[in-house]
Length: 303
Ligand SMILES: [Fe+2]
Image (tube, rainbow, N blue to C red; front, top):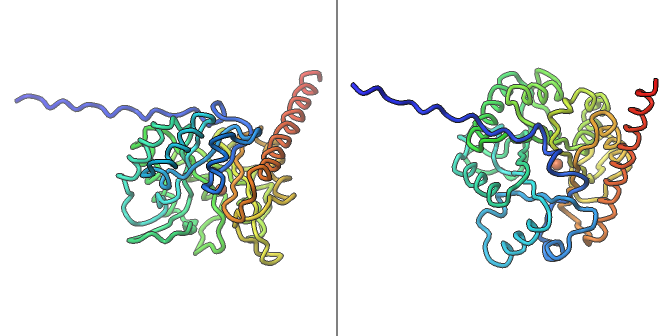
């Protein structure tokens, strides 16, 4: 009897420990509101841009042409919305494969998704919190690993904002760290989400940042939010970034080194030239942190 030949599955092609070697500086989430302008001339301080692949996979014609034009000018990162990593419904492997083709077509530097769930038998159009439980860690880590196996690369997961934590067995940070470890994936560090959650759930944002593994940080997000009450912030991406969030970004750079950082603006979108001021502030914050870190290294080498 002829022995069956089992072809070993090739190991996933891992991307570098982060996107940090391929993108740098400040980036911006591409929105239809300024697509034309962006494709013609991206803001001076934008070094990369982000799209949700689900919004673009089946787009053709003029808009696809503008996306091609933008991708010719700057590196693209992809940030998914609907993979439903924490959900109970089967993973949509067909969608993952389509996303893989999209990533390849545009040579996208990184693909990230939310550490949340967004559907069951239907799409809920929201990013809902996964319970911070041991069972959920196993469940979501297994699903992230399956996505990485299909794509043949590590993905980054984003720490999301949440407004209730159903029956937690551990704090958010322990949950996040264990998922990163078990899934062996990267982190998209949303600094605004850390700030919003720290206020809403009463924890120390700096301590949260301190515990993150710097080698897993692929890139960062920064955004504005809405203040409903002293103890209730809503993550809207609909206003300018506030000073305490800028300070937290500087703190993150100080602890983990400078990482590429993207401005998210989804509502009340001002003219692109106005958003450029916030991009410039990201760059300034990065330069200040780099100068402080090299001065520190200099003084250590001199002692
Ligand atoms: Fe984000």
